[in-house]
Image 1 (cartoon, helix red, strand yellow):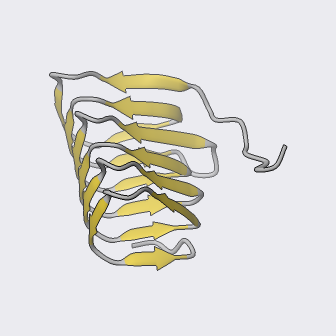
Image 2 (image 1 turned 120 degrees about the vertical axis):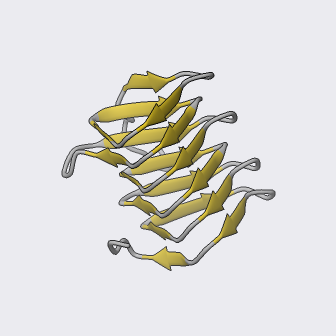
Length: 120
């Protein structure tokens, strides 16, 4: 296995398209956002976690997870203790702290990129 990627935790939580959630969420395993969240999305510390912000997803608040995939929009800081994937339609307004970064052409970041995970 050339890339030696870890198995991803299952997505157990979904904020669907058309849903507006106001407030912070602590989660374990995986979470997908296809609606809008106004608040922080924080994974439980020391547990594998995956957060996906879908193409129509929007998060206004802090994000903290081990593996983060952004296809939609984030307004706020992103703290990623593992791999951060920014797909071509990703839009982030805020600072990003990460261990590994995969950024596709077309992705836009308005903020500082901080290599080596450090609390923002």
